[in-house]
Amino acid sequence: MTTLRFPRTIDSLLRGTDHLLVVGSQAILKAKASKGKNKAGLSLLPAETQACCRELAKDLFAGRGGRAAGSLCAGVVRKVAIGMLPDKVSRHNSPARAESVRSVMAASNTGKKGKGAVLLLLDDPAHQEAATLALARTLHLYNGRSRKAKTPASLGILAVDAKGKVLATGKALQQAVISLRDAARMVDMPPTELDPAGFQKETWKLVRGMTGVTKKAIIGSKLLEEGLGGIHGVGRCALSAPRLLILSYKPKNAKGHVALVGKGVTYDTGGLSLKVGGGMVGMKGDMGGAAAVLGAFRNLASSGIKTRVSALLCVVENAIGPDAFKNDDILDLHSGLRVEINNTDAEGRLVLADGVSYAARKLKADTIIDAATLTGAQLVATGRLHAGLVSDDEDLENILVQAGRQTGELVHPLPFAPEFHRREFGSAVADFRNSVKDRMNAQASCAAEFVHWQLDGTKARWAHVDLAGPAMVAGRASGFGAALLAEAVRRLGR
Image (cartoon, rainbow, N blue to C red):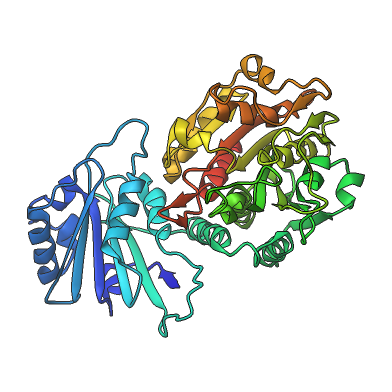
């Protein structure tokens, strides 16, 4: 495990450091040494370290995705590496080039052992958040190996602007880093350790002592008493009972009420529509949406935001057994609609359906954002680095897109067209089915529409973030969504 520190000066960043990574754009790293008093870029470093970085930069070109190079170096720091970012990126990328920052950090192996440091040479101070979060994304907290490092690694992170001015890492950004890393840790945990009961235990621990936060759990048969037949149906046969965890933060004179709803399937076998051919491997990550919601909630509540925020974590294990829900069953959802099951592996929308309806009808939230590793179709539609976004409100959609560009957790809009997509769920015996007839007809949008359908008759505006792709990077959890959702809620409150 790597401990992060945020020094306030170049000297304190370098003190005792054995491995330094300098990250900046190609223009910054290839710029000639400054001769004036206002030194910036590589000129901030001690002479020997600076010379080493300049030599590394000579033969390195960023390309479209960024490049890293390293070398042993005499002087203050034993090993030096540079991460060269492209000067320009496409309009659908983050201006901070967060993915390039992450990739050069991963390639340099900085922060994995010993005492490391990263110096971020930013061409715009607004890029600090995304760049810092990108670095944190590579430093995983969970370690299930038998042999663990005797001496924990540490990493110092310091950002400076184009004029060489040190940018303070405020408490809000530090909390965003903590929330992201904890969200990733939960996703990485083994599913038998983090079953629904384990998820609740972890959640209660993470919000313990937070001012103004209240919590509630609706568990097992109590779900049916509350009309939450979707959550109960999906999780009823698992050894650990299904549950809806509700966290609330209500400041005085709150402006608005935003509910964040997360899919928390701690393991997804596919149910009786069993995943085969290795498709079940990795399904411990099917609670990535709930982990992101929890991270965002902690971030927001700790910052003292003036908006009322609720987090609804729909936590189940989609197991198989004598009491498993079956294809051809009909479940009663919180919205009052009845759904015929034609695919027990389309379970995430069932738990989200209850979650968003409860948020609108019981908690009276005026804005609802759900997050889920919902469909493989999202990866086909928007890829591994952009989450899919579906919303019934253009302003809310734009807020989430801009929040993604700010934090480096990118989202891209998908079609919202209930008139085209609801017809996919026709049922002869119930109000609808839970899986589409035509898998070639905008599957990711259709799955989102199933969730949106549950809000008919309410006044809540809604957005859905399908983060199936970006929730995992190179086989490890990324913590994606925690910063995105928190930033979106902050923008809603402005």
